[in-house]
Amino acid sequence: MTRTLLTGGSGFIAAHVLDVLLKRGHSVVTTVRTQEKADQIKKSYPNISKDNLDFAIVPDIAAPGAFDKAVVSDPPFEAVIHTASPFQLRISDIKKDLLDPAINGTIGLLKAVKDNAPSVKQVVVTSSGAAILDFSKPQTHTFTAADWNHMTWEEATSNPLNGYRGSKYFSEKYAWDFVEKEKPSYALTSMNPTMVYGPIIHHLKDLDSLNASNERIRDIAFGKAKDACPYTGVFLWVDVRDLALAHVLAIEKSEQAGGQRFLLSPGHYSNKQIAEVIGEEFPELRDGLPTGDALKPGDIPPTGWYGYDSSKSKEILGLSYRTFKECIVDTVNSLKPYVK
Image 1: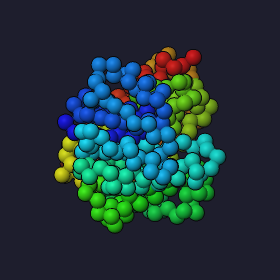
Image 2 (image 1 turned 135 degrees about the vertical axis):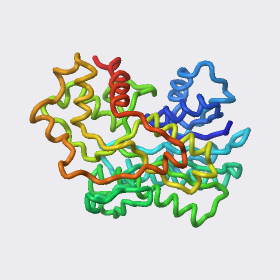
Image 3 (image 1 turned 30 degrees about the horizontal axis):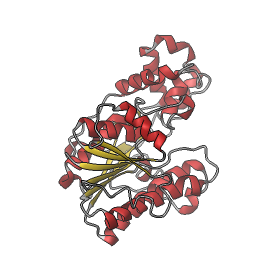
């Protein structure tokens, strides 16, 4: 059992990380922004004791000293998993809404652990494939965990999509720079997932409050993309449950995973294939699916689209990946109860 601090516990990815941690016998304190969110999570685990699941309120992760108290625990933490970072594109201020929370939240946490939690031996940060994928490279390039997306600050602040990609690049790059310069007693590990899909298990008010990546599956499944399938963009994916397990395997195999970046994906996909799986598995939804010309924007480019190498996740963590069909089917099933 590893005493673990999990940040952002009410989020899409963090909810799955929390589930894996508890099922594998770890003791967890998770940060949330409000007591209401803590109460919602607790309802999902009525039989888990306070010793194994507790909460720390951190209203604003970008605030100075936001995590100073949260990282202190009795018994003390041995590991930290940092998932709290925004992924939303409907924003008004790129710096304030995307860049500052990602960068200040990550560096603030690393500093808080260094200064206040000497028992911590490993910090796992949820970064993104966006910190790796550099689309200025030729499409014959195979991306690995050694690649970086070297975005400039000017590019990052030019539009919300670049703002998200920049938030991941800068927050992760600054995290590695911090560890190299400050030499804390813990090792750093980063998870770099590509497009993250998968079933919803966290509290969801309605489908309008869905996490950004799963919005694609929602729109395709329930008629919003009937006239035009959205362009796939990033043709690599990963199931949130495999990503969550990767985080936990990293703290369980800390000696091997410390100091490593992990590019996480089992393969290529397209939005067209999402529609095809839904059509095969959910006949009642077929009338709302994009068909014919409406599907063309979802096609994988005929000449191929960048290679990827996620073998490190299998070799070091022992991770195996779910199939694309399982991911899409389970996601749609988790969304159906919210359809009005």
